[in-house]
Each structure stands twice: as C-alpha cells, then as structure tokens.
Length: 214
Image 1: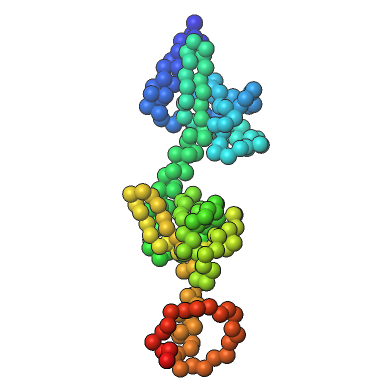
Image 2: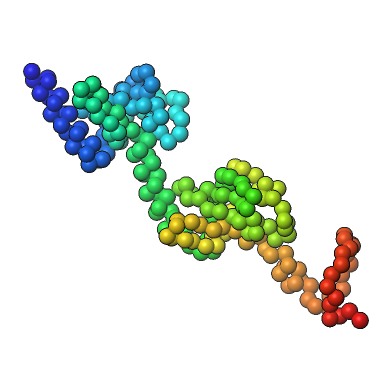
C-alpha cells in the first residue's frame, strides 16, 4: 500500500541517520509508559532517562517544540525506534566545555562553585562545567594542616586563580588563597625591620638554636 511504502521509505532514512549517528529534528508529542512519544518522520520512543542531562518533572515546555535527537536503537521487526535528547545535549555541553577550557589563561581569576571536598583539596566547577582542583596547600595562607572541609563547604561559591593548565590531560589547578593578599607580605610591607610592635604570646615551644642566641 501507499502508506506502507511511505513508512518503509522513512525507515530507510532513519537507518542511514542511525549508521552515521547524525542528529535529527523531531517533536515530542506526549507521555507514554516509561518515557515520551516522539515524531521524527516515524513514531519513536524517548525513554525517561534520555530526556535531559538532569531529571525533568514538567515536560510541558518540550511538547510540540522542535527538538534534536539521536537514534539509540532500531528494531524493524517490532517497528521500534529509541531516541535520545540527552545525547545531543551532552555533546553540546562537551563542545562548550572544550571552548571554555581553551579560553582559560594562567593567573585568570574566575568564579566557581565547590562540587566536592576530599582530604587533599576541593573540586571547583567553573563556567560551562569545566572542573578544577584546589589543592589543600593552595587554600589558605594561615590555616595549615587543616582539613579542606573546615575552609570551604560544598556548593559554596568562590573566586579562584588559575595556577596551572594541563592541555593534554585536560586538568586545571586552581588556588583559593591567591585571591586574597598574602598576609606575610602585607605585614612585611607595613612593618619594616626595626619596627617595634606589641603582641600577645600564644604558644611556647622549642626551636633550633639561632645565630642570635648567646
């Protein structure tokens, strides 16, 4: 029949798109069990896990709006095509991350958010999903031998300085303390040798004998 011939032609087109992993434009038409129904020239199934990179509760803004999809699976016997919108978004985000990574320069001061804290430092998510590490030694001028969790907290927004960029491994080393003045340098600048100061003894300990000792 004419209708069958039209469907076979559309299916052949989908097979070519699937082989080349091209993106294609279609429409989400409504909810079905386990996901959404799509129209891409033929009816296709969009699993709930493939709608977005994050869970989506309200899909009203996606209905009947042109969307980009990639075909994940095809089964002619069952007349079944499974597509993904998430794969398209992840590819797009990857390109944006790569572009942003290449824009980073040494000593740049950038904003980010603490994503994870470990014993050796904290991971910071910068713009466009680029992630970098602030080593514990680069977190504070004065707080030494302190767990990073006592200096920063998860989801905290921070300003950091780009200390090192490894283009091959796609790694970025960041510094938190560099965004504030070095207190030792500031003290030395405002208190030259010979300045008399008042202070409070906080601790007494044994040190190696210095050249000033008699």
